[in-house]
Image (cartoon, rainbow over all chains, first blue to last red; front, side, top):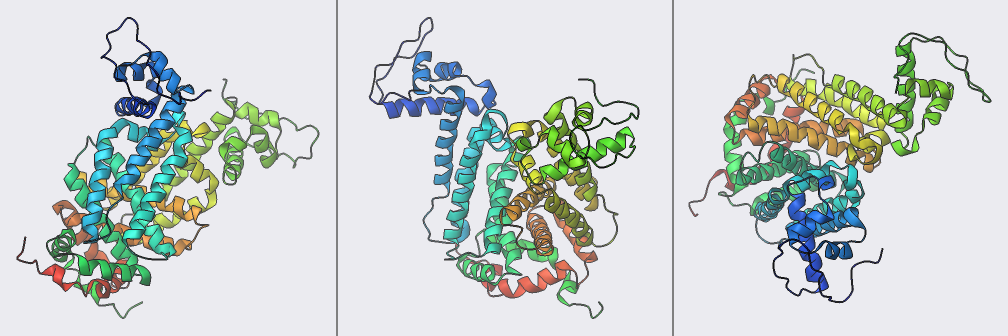
Length: 257
Length: 257
């Protein structure tokens, strides 16, 4: 295993097939190009069905070139692709900490769901594990941890307690699970509706946790004060009221039991 | 691969080690005994570190006996153990369809969490995938589907629409994720608190979905009518009110935008 060349080098020539005219690229540019080509293939096929030869064809470069950049073969290419995807995913949650919480979260969610939409089969394979994928578990966990840390920063809690941490981590799991279900259901409903529902899920879960955790209750009070009436939380509140309105008996505890 | 013997047969004898006196067991009883022993080991060690020899020691039987029942080796034993665990898990959600919904769900959740608590490392390995585990994905998916179908039966909706289905499936993913986080956090908080929080999560998510889906809204209305004021939904409602009470501005949409 020699690793990719450290200085720009002339690319090889594909023999016997038509190839787009080569541009001179730096090592980093070439590497990115190959990883992009691989991610394009992983989006449509399971990792086991993508060979370095396929990547060469997809990128329009010679096979020896791909082998030179990824001497570790398919596994090395796959790990590099997953690492690149993980960096992109972690950037999804990078959002200025101003304005109503749901507006920030909606922007992050839209970026995340666009990633899921684009990567499709590769996203499923990555999260389902097994086969060539297994060694990337730690990378995926890193993304989950980064997303949880970012959300806790947005909640502006210096020392989040176990209940608030579990709430955020569980919601991230739920977003992941819902994304897989969404792909499984042929991408229904549309991304905007899914995004809105996941936001409502976050608000509902946070409010439910607040019922038994004073720290989360403080977070909810602070966040609600900043939400505009015409934002998603206002709409949710006004639509929920008539549904639960008939259950007034729940607000008056019985004297039995 | 010949499969286990089809008629009761005398067990082999362990040589060179002390072994508890053999009882005569039927083929099915012996098979169950070996699977129980294997599950006991998987609860403490990752599957890759459990050999058929270990199972023989754990069950107090001879090594040839274990190999006779599982001629396919470790993979066959592991799959049999996972199938047995899956059957136990599916029974968790088997609950009479009478009484308040949260009471039924709480009983199912308690059985599920007892399973998670008991199987521990094996539960994590199973859901994390990779290695010897990969081929059991379909069994795990079967449990998820069975759990979703059971919950939809309890919601008493003849033809559940996509939003209600996604709500139930996503919550099941969240329960799974929360169970893994719970194990990761050294089983904190205690099972009763975790169970209560997962129930609140279900109620909150169902109510949030009801905001935009008339079918779910009907389910919520029907379920709330059956909930007693001193049950978990009543407690949740009364504890949530003071937290969201300061956000009255959300109920009056502004005329801007």
